[in-house]
Image 1: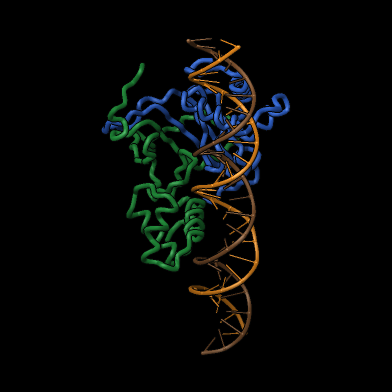
Image 2: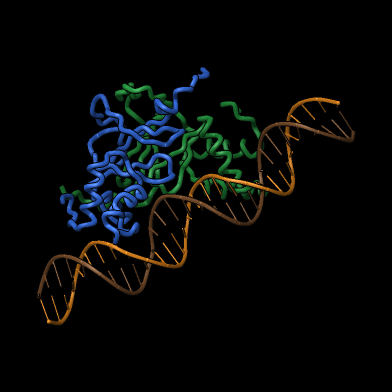
Length: 132
Length: 132
DNA sequence: AAATAAAATTGTAATAGTTACAAAATTATT
DNA sequence: AATAATTTTGTAACTATTACAATTTTATTT
C-alpha cells in the first residue's frame, strides 16, 4: 500500500472495494457491502479509513450536493456529473488535460482540483423539455 | 426580482445581503447578519429562500467540504479555492472561459458547472514546506 | 371593503451524515 | 514475554439541513 499508508486488513478491504467499484460509493454503501464478509467491521472504521486515504491523496472525495460524500479511487484528472433528480454520479472525461488556467496572483498552495457538472441524466432527462 | 422569483421583504433582504457580501457566506452567517435588522426572521426561512434562489439559478451554492453550504450571488463563470486549514473560500478567476471540454456522448442535460481548488491560503501556507 | 384563496414564513421536531472519544483489540518492537 | 504503538470499535454527541403543520402575510375575488 502506497501513499505512506500502512496496510491492514480493513484498509486493504476498503481500497480493494473502491478499486473494484468505480461507482463513487458513499461511506454507507462501502460499509454495507463489506460488512457481510467482514462482520467485525465498524462504520467508524470505514469513516476513519476513508478520511486517512483522502488526506494522503490516495483517493478522491467527491462532494457535490452536501448530502453525503462519495469516494473514488481513480485520482486521475477527470470530472463528475450528478443528476439533480436521481442523484447518481458518473465520470466525465475531459477532452484535454486542463492547463494552469486560474490567475494565482496570491501565494496559494494549490494541491487539488475538482470539476463537476449538474443537470439531468439520460434516464431522468427523457421528459425534459427546455423552456428557453 | 428576476429568475421567476416573486419578491418579498425577506427574499429581497437575503439577495441584497448576498450581493453586498461576496464572501461566500453560510446560511448561518446570513441569518445572523440579517436577524438584528429583521427580528422576525427565522432560519428556516433563510434555508427556504436560499434553496429557492439556487433552484432558479439566481445564486450559486458552493459545496466543497461537505460541512456546510456557502452561497454566491456572482453566477458568472469562476472557480473557488478553499483552504484546508482555515476553511476560508475565495474566488479564482479563470484565465479564459472554458470551452465545452467534456465528452458528452450520452444524452446528459448539463446546466451547471463548478470548479474548485483546495490547498493552503497565503496565511496558512506560510510555514508550508513541500516534501517533494 | 369583506371574504376567500394562495403564498410565504415560522417554530419545533426529526433526520442523517459525520465526528469525538475512551476502551478494547491488534500489531509491532524491545 | 513484556511493552509500546497503532488500529479498531461502539456509543454518544454534534451539526447542518429538512419535514411539516400552524400561522401570518399577501393577492384575488366577490
